[in-house]
Length: 431
Ligand SMILES: Nc1ncnc2c1ncn2[C@@H]1O[C@H](COP(=O)(O)OP(=O)(O)OP(=O)(O)O)[C@@H](O)[C@H]1O
Ligand SMILES: [Mg+2]
Image (cartoon, rainbow, N blue to C red; front, top):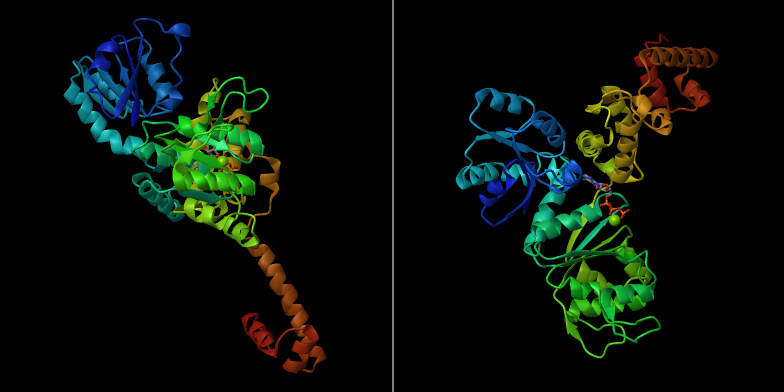
């Protein structure tokens, strides 16, 4: 499903050209000033169709192209078309627009619009482990099986769950997310299963639970590793029977939900300890998607940095932050990110608000990052020379004391004879 924003003085006419299907269109009719005169929140759209025959189109294009691909259109005008393409429009159409011409452009760009060049949906990454994750998401989306998404905190488990839903045949129905770790057991039960009027003090009305509301859609059970044994049995029953009973209720209610669960715990180990039910684990873990920690896919960092700069650049009204300097990227590449992608995103968001230049500089990054010793430390040539010279002096001294006896010299230096022989050779010491 593509969400497209149309901005035109005659937006309703353009909107009418879209045939109902897998494209949802919202329009800002600039002929009728929108309340507040502002754009609708642009973040929810996949692309924009922008009319160039209106005042201020340059500014609008500048603003929008940072957030989504912009398809420009206008009365036939080669100069304007070239100008718009140079300013970052991804395509150009001439008026009058027809259903065919619009559909053709959308189809042409659809793949790219949905599967962005550097990732899948909103999930950015070009590393081999992430490509595997993208493949698994597609497979999971095409099936009805339950999915268990595992991985450390901040690796993108929720993004994966949402992408599976968005690409599945259930995408038109709701995606309900519940953080099982954050809610006490009793509340969790009434949230998920609902309750009947009078079932407990304060239950003055009957309420449907998330599982009932989400019927036909997807339920995301986040932090499933944190729930009590009693609650595990209840979830298991839903998965086995496809039925729920409201708290205080008398009858079973059929629900049709697809469950995606996530955890940062090792559930297999929890099963072995007896802390998690094995039968529930196997029911949930039909498809497992493991999110690798960011330190295991450092080659994703440059594209993630670019992605987060684009995502958060709009927070600076006074200037456009366009990228990170080579030196800043180097600093970012040598951190090990215990907080994974979430930590990287916070660092970039903070840098955008701190920076005084259109490029993020090392000084915009947290001091702890700048100071951390680079991994893969390589001594400078000067240091190498100095170390060799100390080694040579020490070895020569030991050989002198042993009267040239390599075995004895090695023993006094605390190294193996072979090691000392190799050193003598590489350092060019004459015996
Ligand atoms: N590959 C990615 N591309 C773009 N953004 C990402 C990616 N991975 C994570 N993020 C961003 O990082 C943040 C954390 O992601 P998310 O909430 O999905 O992680 P999580 O694994 O569910 O973490 P937790 O276990 O703490 O709940 C979000 O803001 C998300 O948008
Ligand atoms: Mg999460």
